[in-house]
Image (cartoon, rainbow, N blue to C red; front, side):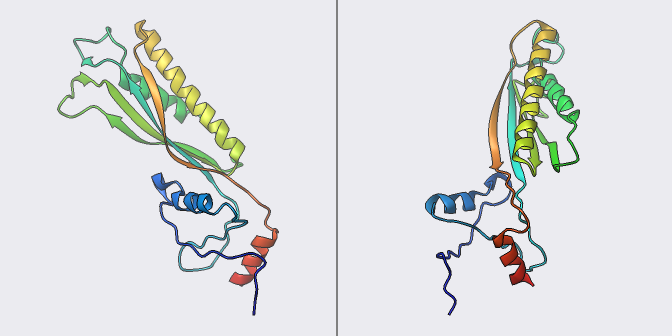
Amino acid sequence: GIKPKYNVIFAGTAQEEGCGSLGGMKYLLKEHPEVYADISIDGNWFTGITFNATGIKTLRYTFKGKSGHSFGHYGKIAITTHALGRAIAKISDITLPAEPQSCCTVTGVYGGTIEGLHAMPEEVSFIVNYRSNSAEQLVEIGEMVEKAVKEACAEENAKWGVEEITYSTETLCDAPAGSQEADTPLVRAFESVIR
């Protein structure tokens, strides 16, 4: 005999992790803009409630320049892998506060081939993943990462007196951060359900 104040939608979603970037939930909310609130159940046990959302950004930075022989063209062209290395070093020097909990990690490096092990690759890339429980901190981390990459390219080009190396960015994952108080009606209601 319970009649809810609002209609209830039961939905199963996919594309939640990694490059899925909450794709299932984003699709559900796009198709149902009338949704007022959400309770997501993950796993087959009820032992706790997560009522804040960690924001996640994952980007691929790609460096492009001229290709050449590691010996024959040394000193004549800017080196994409060195620009990438400079950027990663700068990112590794980023210091984040203990609160809000945040991270900034390079999780993959790509470029070159074993067959062309003596060649300077024309294109290389890395993937950086950064997260924060604060939407504002997430933006600040993104600005620091962008600054690191921009400076790295400028420094590598300046070293050789050229402007050959450029970079581009591709967003692979974008999940917004969000927060609410622990004593909101939705959190309290779900807590009583678990109990």
